[in-house]
Length: 156
Ligand SMILES: [Zn+2]
Image (cartoon, rainbow, N blue to C red):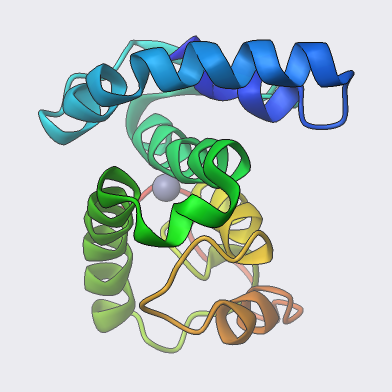
């Protein structure tokens, strides 16, 4: 799944790096998606900015990076891409289930825990979702949290 992080890391790099990372991602994309879909995740995952993930937030990070990398790589074709659409539905299932239970949450724990929320924030900033209002979620995540002592742990 390193291909995901490579695409994101190359975003602001040279054109050659960007194209190489995107080509590698395109080659492995279906297999990566199948692994996500079947729930086969690595033990650890390091995203583009060096943030390391393990345990439950790792699944959020990889699902988010798959969409971010797909959007960067596919450009205009992203909107009609079948895998990207499946991946959106997959991730939104977990988020909307969580939002249903905790509809009042905003700020750093808009979704699940801080780590998951900051990944989701990257996604809504990049407008990867077509089924929800990206701007609305973005502004709800940007709300300053005033809820002291709330649990920090990942919920799932
Ligand atoms: Zn979490």
